[in-house]
Length: 352
Image (cartoon, rainbow, N blue to C red; front, side, top):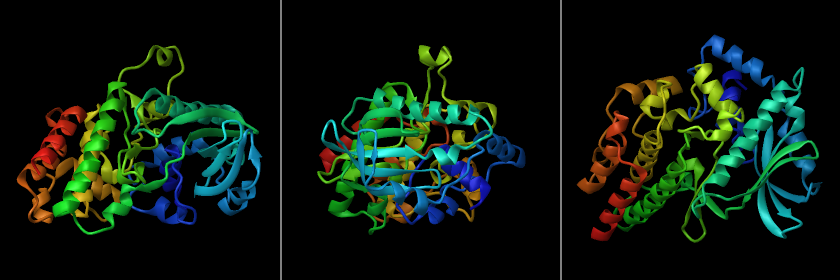
């Protein structure tokens, strides 16, 4: 595993489908080519983590009880943690239990562990702030039996990545996917209302449940656009500190906004750009910005105009092409708000 890939991968604590870790970590979506040697040294010092063999750690916990949670199956796994399907034995409900393995955090002292704990709990706190049916609910978070954990709503469905693997959207399929995007914009409006920027909007973090409802996942990279009092009092998010002080760019390269690539101050407009890329990919079947490496993709995002949707999806209605184009504007001030975007999609759907 490449050191820089591991850093980018574990800063955002994602968990990939079991058995696909190497593909995801080393793939172009997560490889942090932008890190300089000094930045890699900084993160290596801060993380000082020892990845553990998923086959030895993840499966070993199956069938066991962690606190009040009975672990039943692995939903996803990575070098330092996993997400399990579990049962809350007190509430008698199924949950998705995200565990960070204690063996992976064995640094020279407790500093790294405390930073990881603060960051992990920060993810749970930010998820709790958004009361919206389109955000996967957080039930509980803390530390039990030496494991940092987040107990979340178990979503029965699949991510938008599966939709993209199908044919480009035309006719009735175009309308169906526009309905998905309208829901996603509505969820983002609720997130932004809490002064939060998600910072990692992409098809893999948007799920579609069995009823066709959208669920937004993973607030591990989210940050406040306006600091709450509790953050000003010292309970700040470690990821934000590293991003602003260390010059480290966090996120998924193919879905970053130009201002995210440049490492400048982010606003909710960065999420709109990422949703625009997601929309382009969902409708046309491919991404608007491409390159031989993550660095090339990011350079393209910062420099090149986005292709028009109808250039890759012949027959796309002009109003839909214009909608996606507005989300991909290089100037963040020219992009629509999530609320305005939802209303525009609703108007298109009413006219269809």
